[in-house]
Length: 162
Image (cartoon, rainbow, N blue to C red):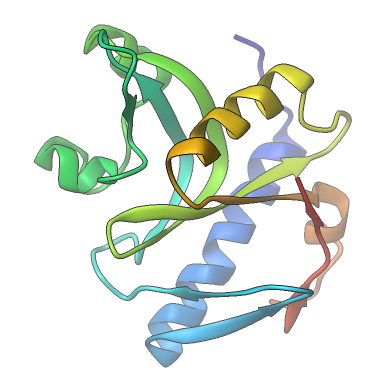
């Protein structure tokens, strides 16, 4: 497993903070995105916004972590999803770890990949397609430089649908 840059790490935390802060300030809020919109839930201490969110396969080759989400799957993960190593320790195979994931009604329905030097790999795109076969999931790439060049939270995100 590679080591991420400070830029990538900071950008994904800033993105998650934007979603959480809007949710805390306004409650249920629609955040504009061209051409889609999503609603961020106010439930839980993470406000339905997760950083470093793993999607795994269990020993029966079933998806774990998308529906239900980790905090509903196991109370141990109420504050944060399991790390890569914790997934392995539980006997799960991580197939994708989303930089930021948005939960709605017990499902991960939106995920963001913060890109800095490299776009989402073809292998990860294949895994994303596998997840999409079982549930509705929209994934977006967003540039770390764009996030970090803002002075405050934007009204809309500039990102690409994956």
